[in-house]
Amino acid sequence: MKAACLRCPLRLRRGALVFCGLLSLGSSSLAAHAAVDGSGDRDNERRLAIRKEALSYEHGEGVPRDPLRAASLYCDGARLGDAEAQFNLGWMYANGRGVDRDDSRAAYFFSLAAKQGHPQSQKMQRFVGEPGPEVPECMRPPVLADDGRDVLVAGSEAQKVVFGLVNQLAPQYGVSPRLALAVIRAESNFNPQALSNKNAQGLMQLIPDTSARFNVTKPFDPEQNLRGGLAYLRWLLAYFEGDVSLVAAAYNAGEGAVNRYRGVPPYAETRGYVKRIMSLFKRDDHPYDASVTTPSPELPRIRLTKGS
Image 1 (tube, rainbow, N blue to C red):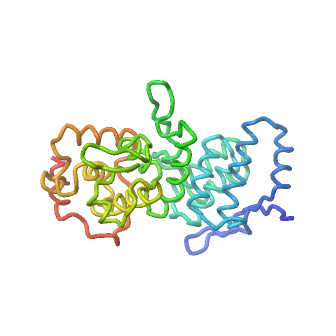
Image 2: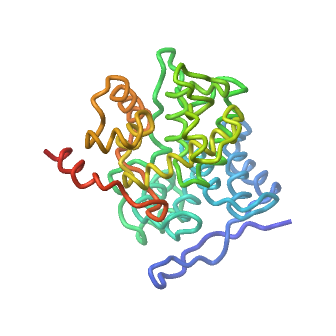
Image 3: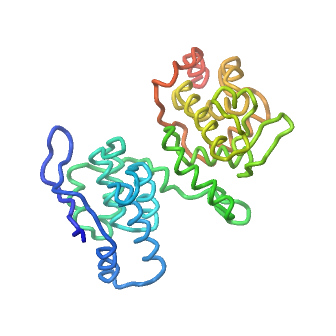
């Protein structure tokens, strides 16, 4: 049986926060927390279940260690108001544990927990400063369809399988799951068997040339299709240095068209597509791996055109 060890700040050393230990909650500890919370309602059970899963991925307890998945789960819990999840995610960002260190983002999550009276988060605020103005992606309000349903939330059991694959695979390619889901929503509406009149195939509507380029031999296999589409998004993000509007335009019309027109091509379909992706993703930029490819030679001119 594992006892919980509080993540208490000891000191700043070489720009990183050092803590006395890792927070590790076994099933008995979680049950104790539920008892302390004094509530057996469904919301509390859901928050505790999410936190338990996040902890297992953070520390590799019973599953392969996957800090990006842990961070995503902690953010789900944070959005549901779980102060412990907010603190744990803030701790990961404050220390760069499996995610890029980001004091501003750490401060955001510590402040949420601190407002609920979480004592450790209140202490941590003095180490990381004030939150920045940007709300983390996973904490933003959902985009709703006409029927009031979040368009990036699975609406069926089949869609849940796709969402699970995206959340598992996207971090491996350095792609935000939300960006990947936005593309899938716009491309195929989560239909793995989708086929366009231009022979674009599967979830991410890969044309045969793109499938060949990224080693997709079975474009109607959901995992293969996702891996090909994610590999292409990773490449485009590096090629256009994280500019989401250019990435979306290139995904729809090809990077050659974006270079030729030095920006989003003047095609009604492409402009509508870019607008939809941007409305779903809600960010103008995205982190990228510069080692994937050299940037577009047209980027300086594109930026000049955007700035004019």
